[in-house]
Image (cartoon, rainbow, N blue to C red; front, top):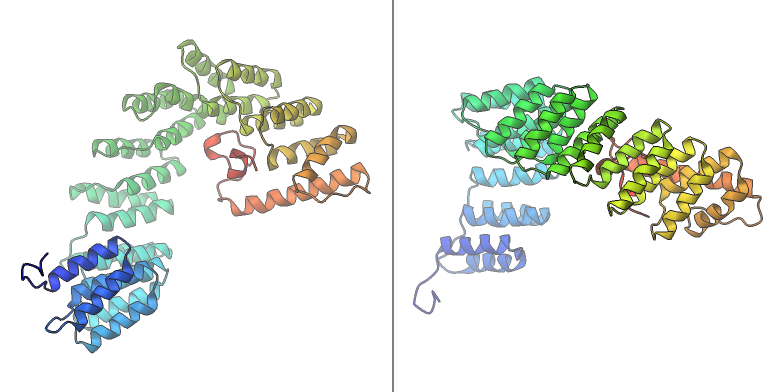
Amino acid sequence: MMLEKGFVPDIVTYTCLLNGLIKEGQLKVASYLFQEIICKEGMYADCIAYNSMINGYLKAGMIHKVDMMICDMHRNEVYPNPASYNILMHGHIKKGHLSRSIYLYKDMVRKGIRPNNVTYRLLMLGLSKHGMVEIAVKLLDKMVLEGIYPDKLSFDVLITAFSEKSRMSSALQLFNCMKRLYMSPSSRAYSAMINGLIRKNWLQQSCDVLRDMVESGLEPKHTHYIALINAKCRIGDINGAFRIKEEMAALGVVPTEVADSSIVRGLSKCGKVEEGIIVFCSIIRAGMVPTVATFTTLMHGLCKEGKIVDALDLKRSMELHGLKIDVVTYNVLITGMCNNQCVSDALDLYEEMKSNQLRPNLTTYTTIAGAIYASGKMLEGEELLNDIEDRGFVPTYKDQSPEWRMGNALRRLNMIRNCRKAITSENEVEPLHADHESMPAEDRNPL
């Protein structure tokens, strides 16, 4: 259209096109267009155009192309600006190349190019990722001395880094500094702070930060409230847990029944099962249906106390309320029965589980196989053993005795389980935990 009307596009037009193509992921087309700029008579690619291409190549992981672009800049006497260095530093920090990023910063200073807010923020991010948050925080003073005032994102990087390391005194100092400067952290920084404070058991401060988050116009996650409720229940502050629940319900973060259910789960997790049942019954009386996770967590608490009959009553209540019993719930009941020497009942539940078209998973097999092996009920375990072999968890040894096969199966299952535990997150240390939201993937979904 421009050419038809006799207008000749300039470098600004071309650079806008380059940026658009790169954002759309059309890097190859952008490369052709850049070559057209270079070859066009009377047209010269400026630093901004080069920056666009360097950014595109870095995002695509094409480091060799980035090096070619930098050489091309030097050859054509196009001098990099702070944005050029920032783009390169960002790419290296994403790759974990901190030393390269520091070299670029020093090269920048040596050439008389003044670092800006983004430069220092990237250095803070790189240092924090490498565990050098104490050095990163000193860059704030350096910025101020150079007349560069830290922005919200710089504080976010440091607050998140301190919070993830549970250095909450330092995180709160930075948070208070932000408030004095009339700035508020991002959702990510608020979340990191709340989680860090809960880990330290600084519950009052975590409540204050959560309320500040709401007052700042940001929407907290329901998991923040649930973590606080669990922590309050753990220390016996039931009234405090209810206050947080009411705040959560008033803000509409979750439906009322989910908020109430979180109280039940919090009480159950900290061993206050009787209190949890009282709240649970009040939910039922109010005509609301607790969540599947709530039923399961209560069952887990009852099973730990040896109250298998009460746990089975809850299972029947689940069915009456039309809730679908999943693999996690069955595993909780089966584990409870096996721990209380009710192996035959556990096998009945195992059969029921299969008849409901639910596929047993590794936890199911390991728990039942261990109970059968310990009780010496090899005849009852023969069918289970065939299932385990059919699923391919262990090889089939038809020429060996059932006792030997079961012992071998149990060893194999535990070996698989330990391998899977090793690759899950460090917090997932109890594979038979009843809470759906914190279960390892293998227990949430059938194999």
